[in-house]
Image 1 (cartoon, one colour):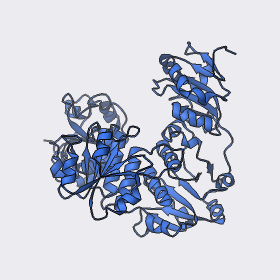
Image 2: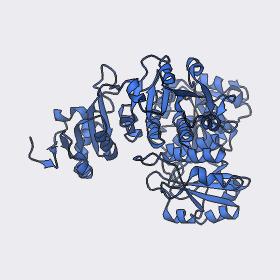
Image 3: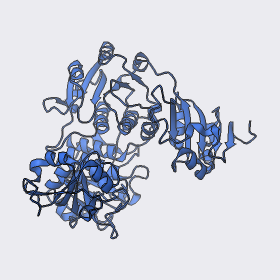
Image 4: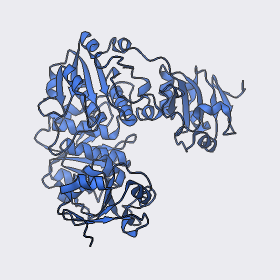
Length: 275
Length: 275
C-alpha cells in the first residue's frame, strides 16, 4: 500500500508506460473492441471526470482509475468511499499506455456485472424504449443520453443491437448507459408479449405516411404505460415487430427528406411522451 | 474528350493514383481541413451517392467526380445534364488517392460559390434557426439534417460556428447543408435586429428552469415568424444574445441530467414549432 493517499483512495504513481498494473487501459483503440464477446476482456471503460463520476454512482463499480493529477483533484470527494487504486500519470505516460492522447485526462475501469433481467428493469417502469438493430455505438450512446434527459425509465434490446457498454457508447451517453437500466430480450420478438402482459402499449416508429403522428398517438395514452419501439436507420423495424405492435407512429416530416437519425427520432418520441 | 461516355457525362478512367486530374480528391484527411480559410482550397466535397445527388440538385455545382463503376451506374440519370468529368477508378486506386478506404465509393467536388446574404435567406422564410458557437462539424451537420426534415426554412450563423461546408458536416447532414439556405450574420449580435424588423420572434434556448417550456412558448406563436436561437453545448448562448431575445425557452428535463446534445435540443425545438 502506498502512503500516497487522496482522501480514502490509494494513489499510485505510474512512470513506466509498460507497467502491468495499468494493463486494463492499454491500447484502447486496438485491443478489446468487442469487450462483450467471450474473447473480450469484458471491461467497461469510463472516460473523463463526468462519466467517471457517473460510473461511481452506478452499479458498475470501478476497480481502477488512470489519470492525471489535475483530474484526481477534480474528482476529489467523489472518490471517497471508492475502493480502487488511482494510477496517477502524466498526460504523456497516459498517452503511451492508452495509445492515443486522451484530453479527458482520466479513465475508470469496471468489470461487467451480470446483466439485469427483463422483469427487473420493467418493474416500476412506465415508459421504456425498445431497440431493434441499432448497431451503431454513437447512436446507442445518444439514445441513452436522451432517455435519461427525457424521462425514459429503461431500455430494452431486441436483436441486432450493439454493446451499450462499449467505451464509445458510454462516452457519447455521457455515462447514462451506466445509469439507465437496460435488459436484453432473450426471446425476440416473443418477449414483447411480456411488455403487453404488464400493460405496456407498444408504439412502433415508422416513416409510413399512413401511420398516426406522434402527437396523435401519445394523446390517447397519457395514463398508459408506453413502450416506444425504434429500429435502425434505413431498414427500420422488422415486419414481424411491426405486426406485434399496437400503434404505428410517425414523425411528420418535410417533403423530399428521408428519415431522421435514429437517436433524434427516438428523442422526439421521448419528448412527445414526456410532454 | 474521351469517347467513353455515360449518358451526357464524360467518363475518364484513372489507373495511376498520382494522376494530377484527381488532385481535388487527394489526401482528404490531411489536406484542406479548413477549406473555408483563405489558405484552404475552398472545395466542397460530397461523399456517397445520396449526398452527390443532393449536391447536383443544389447551388453547389460539381466540377468533378471520383468513383467506382458501380457508383457511376447508381448515379445513372442523375448525371444527365451534369457538365463535369467522372473519374472512374477501382476502390483500391480511390483509396490511394483519397488516403483512406472510402466505402461510400464516390466523391463529388464543387467550388465554393459566394455566400448568400442574410436578406436573401430571410426573404419568404417563416421559421429559421440561429446558431452561436456551434463549432463541431457533426453537430452542425445534424442540425442541417434536422432542419430539412422538420421544416426549418434557413439557418443563420452568429459568431463562433464551424464551417457547414466542411466534408464531415456535409456528410452528417446527408447533403442538406447544401440544400437548406444559410447565411452568416456579418454583425453579431446586431443582425438579430434585422430578424426582429422582419417580424421574427426570437426564442433563446436555455437550461434555465425559470424559462418557459418549449410547448408553452410555441403555443403563443402559431401565426408568427420564429427564429430559434441555439448556443453550443456547455456554454450555451452568450448573455448578450440572451438579452437580445424575446422569449427564453427550455426543454423540460429529468432531474439529475445535464443538457441534451445541441443538435438534439435544436431538433426538439424544430419539432415543437412544426407541431
